[in-house]
Length: 180
Length: 314
Image (cartoon, rainbow over all chains, first blue to last red; front, side, top):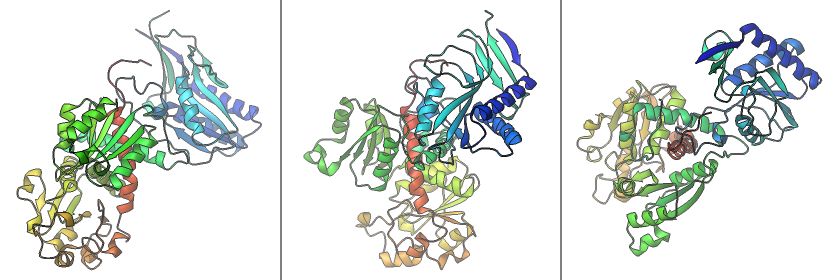
């Protein structure tokens, strides 16, 4: 078992700042944008990206939190029932451009669940996906619009995003698992 | 709480403190689902929940049915009056036949205590008790606890008074079990004929002085006088009961400033609770009903979810 640090606190900050700029560039400003983070770490990242958007544009955009547990496709096959946490989207997403944010993009199944969940809240103009890490191995036709860092991995490795506000430790991204 | 292993909900005696807290925590998340425009999540898609009601019910049955439907489960309703039960079939046989149709859960209400236990001993499906005799009504107690926690921010250390017909009340027994487990102090109050012998053994205190009880309590929970069970003359008259034990504005003068008044329904207005109080500022009766759906969603989700058979690692 090895642990490799692949992003430092500063790397995470720069990547998120770049993503904030890319979002604003592609959407020509913050008009009609909103940000939805996927619990738990996507939520923390989304809050930070929104803070950067505020620094750049002067104002934050509407912010929501999504818990995808009830939309998982493996609810009847997994061993123990996952804990359901609250979804908080207090604005109408219909007609809005939704930036969906998660920490790691892997099989794509979480994002599939999140898309289903979002559609239950309304009909957005479009949904764009931002992730801090894309580690490959997709099982569904899903891709990210904004990526902090692409990391080639093997399936049995584990990519862990550690964030101050969730883990009470300095920000970093590590890979755990066997060497290639 | 690391692992959820319960498949049945028969009464709260069988649930640990941690398990009760897990249900209440999960219910919080489900409350939001009922507030959406699209009040449906796919968590229990493909599951079937059967309501088997041998006793009439409005609230509980509607609440369970909505809870199941909002989780995308399919539901059917079987009421005693319109089924083979009226032709003499036993409750267990009826339940066995329903199980043979490959359902996933049976929600049962019966006038005899212990029927849900018998069903769960003999069947493989999840059995959920929606009230059996004078014994237990666990989902009502859970939604009461959820409402108390929501209104007062905690349960531990609170003084809760259950007032009235304790003798015939499954709601009282379930609440005593649950609330004491979570650290509340429960006092029962009412005419001595309606306070059952030995209720102290469940951990509740008995106080026959309503004024004292009102002064000391954070939560007042008057119960319905079960008129259908009054043939044995536990009370001289309903009017006398209303005068002595009915909660009205006058009696509430000495209550704590932010007292919470609950009622499991159906209410007999003007008997255990005056209309003024039932609709007044302290009353959370309709919040209880709203929360009932969320709590039952949590129960269905937890009982019918993961099977514990295969392991999927993500």
